[in-house]
Length: 66
Image (cartoon, rainbow, N blue to C red; front, side, top):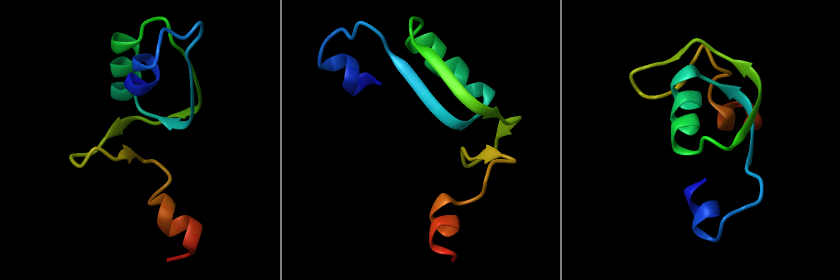
């Protein structure tokens, strides 16, 4: 989002997300209060490594069956 806004002041900023967690939504809301955030699912939290819990697992592993 910072790179998008660095290129100019967009008329509208929309964030689309399949899975979010409350800390990320708060961070985006504080940094970009005018942004519209659309998410399919809000999971409960982040783990110590910053992964969404329960989340969907490793996207690369899911995509490539590993």
